[in-house]
Length: 219
Length: 291
Length: 69
Image (cartoon, rainbow over all chains, first blue to last red; front, side):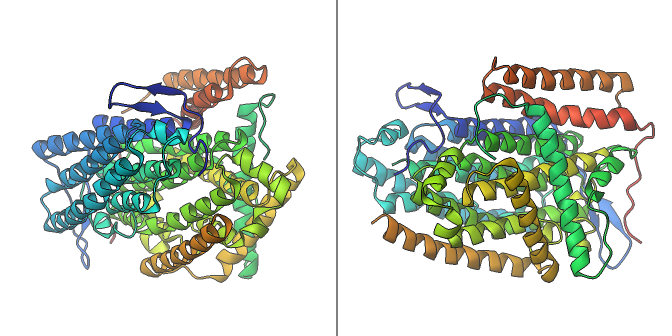
């Protein structure tokens, strides 16, 4: 429909299925994912202050080292999955990375010992789980119609046009990973302490959404 | 802002854009004050603000996550610098809107990194107001249907041939206007910096951190308004660009001055309604323009 | 985490130097726009904040969080 959505590809690495291609758009997104992953890697979590409403009592939440280690691991895994999703040139790989982002997002907050946050993580997990159905179905329709999952082939325009339903399902799958209107549970997850890790939750789904916008405009 | 290949002084343009953006914010405040029958600050107040904050004693709060607390200020200025260069090079509209959405992450970063409950709620509110970005993507899709490209230079060329998109795709312009409105201070949708949260996400960033945030705000205002003019009016010469930007800020100031700040849920509801209307509009455009 | 004023000043001059040199090189058409803007995107925020640090350079320590009444 539209040519060269993300700009002219600067670099294409064809390595079997592991197709990687870089346009100005995907490089920008990749670098942003990288920046925030490095931030999660090097920064300490903050000490969140809680006020008891109605009184003047307050307390700082401390995060235990074990909990912090696990959550940092999950945040970095989430960052790596996001980076993968940003530069991959293969639709199936993109859906795999997206599903992995959903899992790691639950992992980032699952270690927090707060019933409120755990509830939110559980609800978010259910939505993300359900969203993988249209996500992979969308990729399957892409493969069935065009006979290829390569975005380079889609970009060339030599393959048959992708039906709107496939694009819709791919979009729905990504939106289910945490965009409006399914982000309600995610907003509750932000009550968890540990800012550098929690930010990865929202960054990853935002970047994946930005990438899928490019992908659905390709075919 | 026209696209150009070389022969411009990049750093000077960046600084001018920052100061002009701060001046626009000052005009915005002044007009709101005059509408509400207050004298209001002088129009260069936001520039003075930025300088004032930069002279204040600064440290990092004990409860904060230090690297994130500082890093997010650098990222805030960095992403809008990038958006500015995408704008002047006539690059992809998608990149600018990607950066616009990432500003939300920056707001989270500001809010969550300090550990203060006020700024945390500012950050949480910025998550629930994520609905404000969706009209943006629908309007981008509509523009893409008409112009068949998302490069700013191509969009401006299209408008030179076919006339401004403001007339051709008026609802898309309205949607983008609401998107810009949701990022203006004192507006109906600016729930992330509501006064019941002290200053929302920026409560704990004081001194030079706040000065950095002011620089980011100046650049952001400049870029967003210039992108609106480039996408919906077309290429403009420098004097007309400045006139257009001041006109835009006057309209935005009127919209901000006569509307109360909404409660978070009302704000989200209205943004979702706008999105739904835009989806209907996009479907109609898709059927009529591209059968 | 404290930094000396001289260190900050050095960071500022390096950053400002990179910004000016990059834009001059672009002005003369010696480097393409993406390279120039990439350099500026990285150095501009650092330069601005270090400039502010130079003329502020607070000597006081940390704070005691003030939490309501």
